[in-house]
Structures are given as structure tokens and as C-alpha cells.
Image (tube, rainbow, N blue to C red):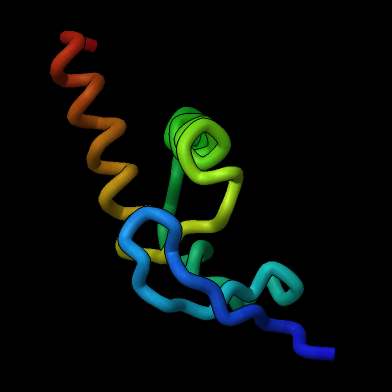
Length: 75
């Protein structure tokens, strides 16, 4: 049984290896996210991408997008 899954990022369509079965080796642990950032990304994934995982590059972009929205709202 393969522990890792070849996946395509639903946002940018670049291939990446999803390591959901070995979460300690997963690329998503290479980014520090606050609870609010995680919630924003989770909601974005559920609403727009059927809950799929994002590649590390898109996680960084979504984190920046979250902060840009905060700035735009004046928070």
C-alpha cells in the first residue's frame, strides 16, 4: 500500500506528493499557520476545491491572501 499520493494541486494544477498518511513528513508542516489562517484556507478548500489539499506554494499564497484581505478591511 502506497503511503503517499501523487496529487495535483486543485488551485495551481502543479503536481505534488500528498503525504496525508505520513503527516510528519508532509510539506504543509513547512509553513506556520495561525488558527485563523488555517480556518481561512480550510474554508477556501471546502468551498472552491472540494476539500482537496494544496501544494506548499499555494499555501503560502493563500496565507498572504488572507492577510491582504485583513488589510483591505482595515483590521
